[in-house]
Length: 295
Image 1 (spheres, one colour):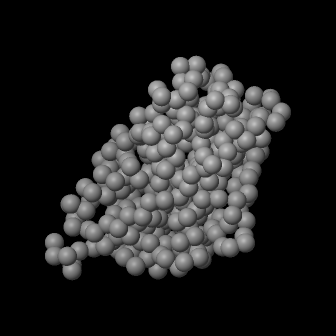
Image 2 (cartoon, rainbow, N blue to C red):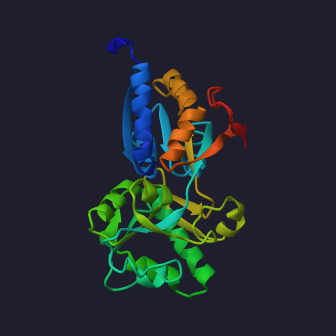
Image 3 (cartoon, helix red, strand yellow):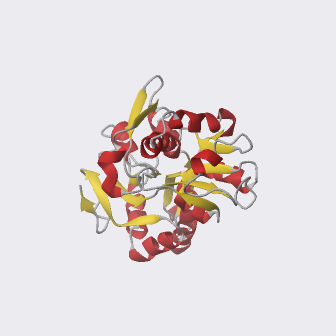
């Protein structure tokens, strides 16, 4: 296809999705001639590009569907669609200190040891960051250990804070950290070892919404000086085509591809826990979101 006639697609994509979705972008570009401009980063950073800088993408893929309702509806979009699940884990490698000792029963003690370095993401930038804080609170309740949340937070100091899931994973891969709190999909796609946390605290069990909802945390909002409160809830990724998307038709065509059975299988094989069909929240979602159910 001649470059002047090619579709262009600007996509803001959550950092934790970047690695598995890149081959999907490449295959689509090769097949259609579409020029895909991808910006990867923390979900709340993407939101602030829209709300503070006025930069409107054609498609936005966020690690927390709740962010749309809190920060982008109705001014920037009228609908969003849940499309994948995830859960929190404690990831590590063979090089991590006490790697051969840590297990599902003793992880809270190991990560608080003075000899280990543990990292997390910035809760003001990335959903995995504030979800980690929610998980700490749930862990304190689950293990019935007063002060556990505060001591887990203290054990993962500011110096080990990173903006997003991918940058955090890179530090673990480089051996600069012993353990990180991250998504299971990130751990699997990077070949990390990980502790599978109990369903009561990993935010991955869709049947435990009420349980998770007993905890909450507050982070910086979509505009300077504002705050947003996120309650615990099962982890769901969300997507939308914003209002005034510069290449709306191209975004709709890509959605048809993204939600097709072969691509969904490709993403599942790349450790993304895709829903059988997207679940649309709000009004005005395009017909190209095939097989979607309405919430």
